[in-house]
Image (cartoon, rainbow over all chains, first blue to last red; front, side, top):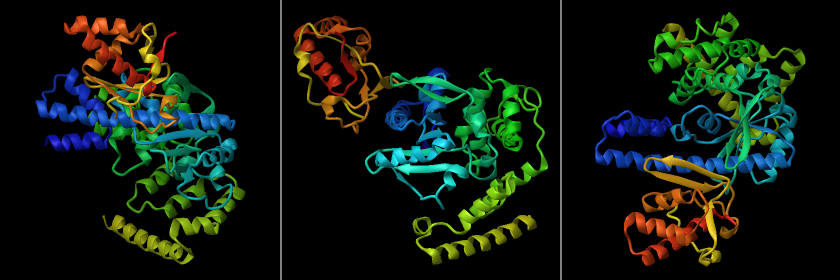
Length: 345
Length: 112
């Protein structure tokens, strides 16, 4: 039982919360359990500090190239939303850059030895359409998630990127100031992570939503306005429902319908269904993405980039053209199978 | 994580030098210990920033807390000797080694 608790807290990056529970709330652990927890906690926090040092280095590399970055997710939430950053561990570094500075940002990082995990389908695709890109470095112990927007697929494409940058919140890290999204934007981002991320949803973003919502600091009018402007009512509603259900939070603190009023349009329910379906595939997300692109020219460009990608992308992602078509056929078949299974249920 | 033992800083032997926790530290309270990591790789490590955080626990944590304000090795040793009712000369040697180790990891600065 204890091993399962420890494993689960490690996987959900909640060792700091478990430690706080044990030390402040008087949860009884025997000596071995206490030592084991402290050892695991130290390992996790040592990793966090190393990632923070890398984050500072990355921010400096980007600044030197004239690129401003916003710190997203783990490090920002740990320092700004939790009473002690030790309560919120994280596994990678997430940075947001402006689309207009995207190419410069990627070039600066590649110049520093970072390598993209995948090439973009065609030049300019990431800057215009993608969530972002992941970069790794042969000599550095972290993975960088460089973001243009907050999510993959249609809900990422409807985020107003100007809004994302309209406000920020600075915090001190290693003797210098770095900037995160402000509280309302961080909260909505956590909702994207919770509602559109892993299935089933991980506890980390749910815990973040609870932490930010119950802090009493969020301006719910701003949350509602941004949610509506970004066409994300379905995302935010689902995230709050999940959070209150999974964490068994008190009903009287539930913000939906009391502090936060959201009407979810039907077309958003359809788009959300693509993310939540067992047949969630890149094909499904692509089709749903085309539907939300406002301009015909963007739709055409988007489809053309994915239908006729450059050779380097195909080679790296699939190992060759034949493998790509085989993979597409296999995806199509499994999608149809899953669709039949969904219908029969 | 590191226990802080590396090659040292020659200025640690300077009795008048005052030391304090470095600016620009990344740190976490980790249960009964503290982890500290220099935000920038220390020059003493030849720019190598692959070293992990320093784990400060037990007496090292006591020393670390005393180093929040500038203090000489001698004054540090006197405080620790009094705290633990230990032989001042032995403590002086241990404190000096600890300061040297902290300094080489970039988590300690000369205050003057």
